[in-house]
Length: 119
Image 1 (cartoon, rainbow, N blue to C red):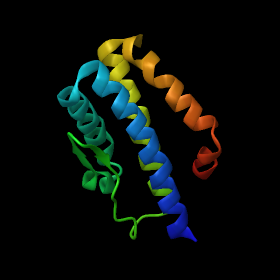
Image 2 (cartoon, rainbow, N blue to C red; image 1 turned 30 degrees about the vertical axis):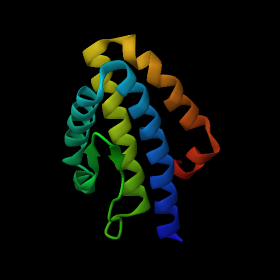
Image 3 (cartoon, one colour; image 1 turned 90 degrees about the vertical axis):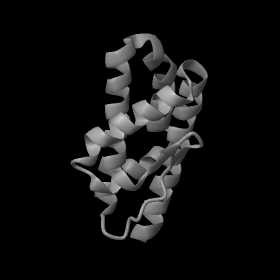
């Protein structure tokens, strides 16, 4: 059961990250998007080392994580922390300019049925 929940979590977060990725690539370009995602991941990977295995390249983000040694709660908390840190980083760098573009996606995600998995 836990492995199914982990897979579902990875799927819903992968969808969210993909939406954010596509939006940002159109606004600031691929290279800047990669740098921002890597910086925010690095910031939270001190507490959630499993995030270091995420792949971030010009193709986007791949959440192909080995979740065998982490709990559902750790996975959820790490992925949420990454999103929160990413939004904070974007807001620090650009103010509301880009945050206004991605906030609706995150709000929709948090209000969606898929988000029931992360509560």
